[in-house]
Amino acid sequence: MKWLKILAPMLALHLFVWIASHIYFANNKEEVLLVVDTSYSMKEKSVRVLEWIDQYEASDRYKEITIGTDKALLGGLSDLSSKDVIFRTSFGKLTNDNLLRLYSNANADVRILLSDGSLHPQGWDLITF
Image 1 (cartoon, one colour):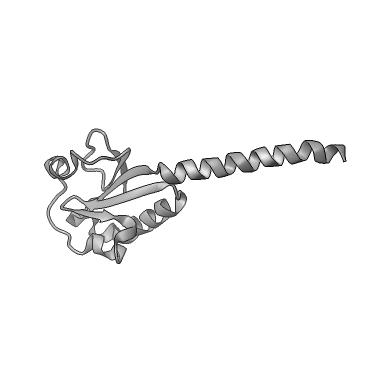
Image 2: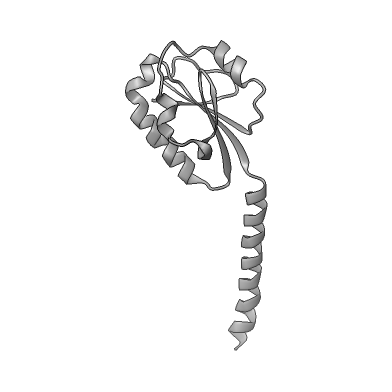
């Protein structure tokens, strides 16, 4: 019976901390801006990019992911009807000017660029394919 008197408060404390953490992180999600390079060089890598996005999305439920391309902001990742819309058009080349023009005022904690590595803009986490 002594072990129950010791174990019960520990379990109650553990449960309280877990619930409080869940509530805090659910209400304070990390803002992630995910930008995909849709230039010609990335067309053949689109399947791998979409797989990476799926894995990243599933890795943490406490993220709010906004997705865009180097040409346009698409909106929330969960709001897309299909992830195939990301690669609906592929043209041109990724430029730093496009990223600055589209995403300089983006309010995000983390900025991730999925590209071929031809450009590494300052302030972005670059994932190369």
